[in-house]
Length: 207
Image 1 (tube, rainbow, N blue to C red):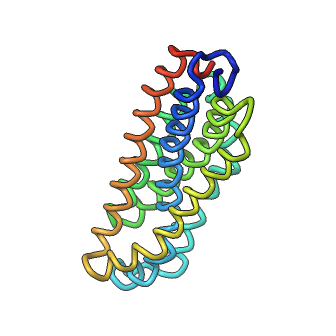
Image 2 (tube, helix red, strand yellow):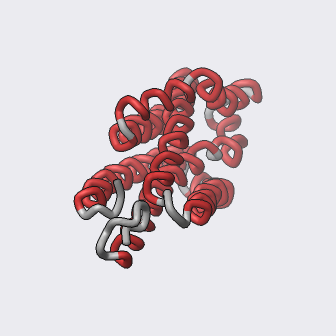
């Protein structure tokens, strides 16, 4: 039985493949949550070492929300046009690139990075929901959403508890580059997912 469509011949392999796909796409989302929440715990050091004002820190947080208003619908249209695999690569690459710009520690470039990060991350969440519906259309969709949300919130938890320690024991720059590195790892996880999705389609685990 196919885990999503009811047509595959190996239910155990289909089940394992579906949850591995869930894990991979959730890793990218978890990385994005880690990056989104990095500003809060690093605020004291951003003010102290980069001499940012409270207003500038506010902008690093709030500029993320601008794409929610402007680009999420466009992202959904692109996902339908490109397909979920190509769209997911595009959006994860965009938010990973945004975290790299944010790690430069130059306010104007950081602001651009956070803006691009917001576009990529919010559009990716649209694509992610479509991927989950693709793999879990018959059963397990609610559980899949729950697992993905758990992993995403784990990214928030890691940011608030891990980044202050990293910045204090190493440097602010190291903490920001670790955020970028984790998001690049999320991109790698997404690339692996593409190969897994192709495998799943070939084996008729997913349609």
